[in-house]
Image (cartoon, rainbow, N blue to C red; front, side, top):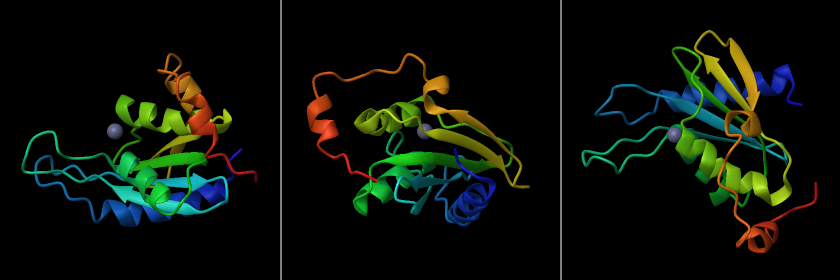
Length: 146
Ligand SMILES: [Zn+2]
């Protein structure tokens, strides 16, 4: 279970990242941060494109930031917005493949700019996620032991 200090650390990282959001279309910045099972934090912001459909969510960018650094097992993902906002379905599904590595649920935290937050779990937010069976062995080959 994630503790309040870990949430504060995630909020701080996600808030900074939100300030760097590249939101030329929506003008709606979102910040995100993931806490890995090795207790590292990686942040992300939403990045939009002048070409429709080429942008990416803050959550996906935070996850990819962790992957780039060799981390793919997650304890928590936090988003920060003006109001508490949970990740979109695409991001939840994207995160779900990493959940399938070790089947340990991932906490999803929706924080607002005041630092207030709500906590849910990945499996509660996406109870009917697409689950791979075909690639499960390959996915689990990425497993670390913490
Ligand atoms: Zn998303």
